[in-house]
Image (tube, rainbow, N blue to C red):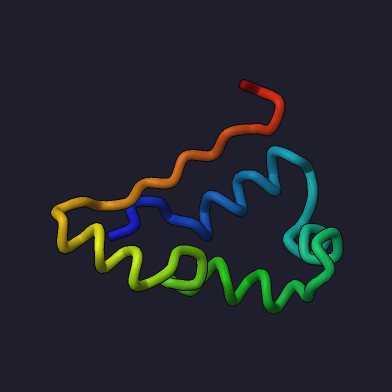
Length: 71
């Protein structure tokens, strides 16, 4: 199971960067509807088979976001 709430995570990051999801979509060359659909879909971000493999091994998945250049 993916522990993160991807929808909330993306919305928070947009707020932190003072942009809307529509502006984010424009920046990456897609529509705001597509961005919204991807973040709301549970298996839209992480491959379903990958999740199943780790679940079978007894693991959950937790995504960590690291700002580029912060290393």
